[in-house]
Image (cartoon, rainbow, N blue to C red; front, top):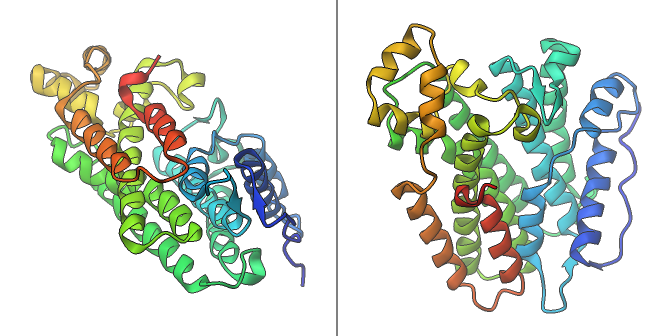
Length: 325
């Protein structure tokens, strides 16, 4: 029986950029199928890696006073990134998306059936990376498997809520937030919590890191929703305006509907141009966004001794819709 590729080998402690490269190596190893069955779709995924913001978040949460992180962190954050990648593959199937990160999506390139199986296979690799024989050290493997499983459950619930809400032009801000708390907030929370747990923080501080990650993830999703409307397809990473055209109602659209209710009728009739234009003009300083920003800042302020605080603040700014250039 063919086995997975051997896990990479690293020193006990690594600098952040070394850690990021190590996580990338774990991901590449996980995307190396020794049987050859998934070779072509996995090569497609390898050449379309994202910015690994979740891995960067986990690294900053795990930094020590010397600016290093333990090697134990690498396979755990690689598992988080693989979980994220699997959800993107499944999202593209559900959304019938043609592009992802400026290139053909996996279902567009290989078909829905191959994409479903590839996404499912990635999920199995997530769990194996959290087990000692998958690359992770033997300390507390059950804890990390539990964290990953809970995040996966929340992701599925968020995706299910979104599917049930497709073409619901009466969607409220509260309902929207509930959807993205599962789809995006949960995974950012998992990244920060994984870093904090691996670094050995006490339970109260772990909760603060998880809350910070959650708030950051919520802001990041709101930012992504604006990018879907305002950037060219290649910059946004997917088809511009595709969310509304696919029945996914996001915060800028909800706010545009609140200002001009007649837009709902036009969208129901298949005319989205005016609604998209109105949504693009929605300012990214809505009170909901400001609330999440304040709460994320409050979490940072309550972690004054965290060595990664400066890096965490930079990542928070990067996730904030107010700083879209």
